[in-house]
Image (cartoon, rainbow, N blue to C red):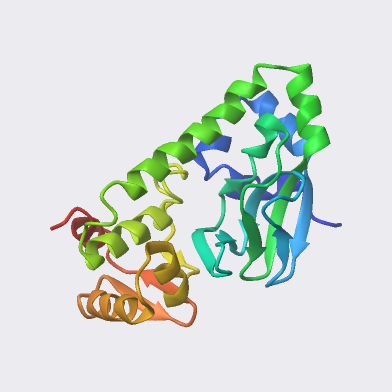
Length: 233
């Protein structure tokens, strides 16, 4: 039997936003959702595209970014389970604000826009729940950008890695990720650091036993040490 959205409840419940929803809202959301297996290196949407709905990463990783006027690709975030994205355009029916593409093969949950709008129309209280997702992301954004340009590279990198382990504060306690699907190019693009600088800092972290570098990924071995570095210690 093909997998259904409810088969991924254990993953979804790791997210703070979904886990805090009333049971009836969860049921309605999953009842209106569909699973989308997506191959690696597939563009989901581009800036300016019509909004197709609300996504959640169930497996794999999705890069979210944009292209500047000079044609350079800017990476803003790497979304991994159980992160949601695509909610901004639902508020004003506007176009997509960023580009999104799969870095690895991924399984995504999609709540099509028409279904989402029908839910919001039938029960306007749901706007509050959707708004809490936006606020959660805004808080994480402010925290990640505070002083980011003036901090030493090791602190900046440690803060980004720490944020990624708990999906930028979006996972419930006890479900932090210690295996991150991210490489040096991505980290450099997100932080405005050269690949060489990222490599040097990661090598130092590895020597300290903080993490283990793997091909296209990092394994966090000592979360407490990473937290101390992120705090400037």
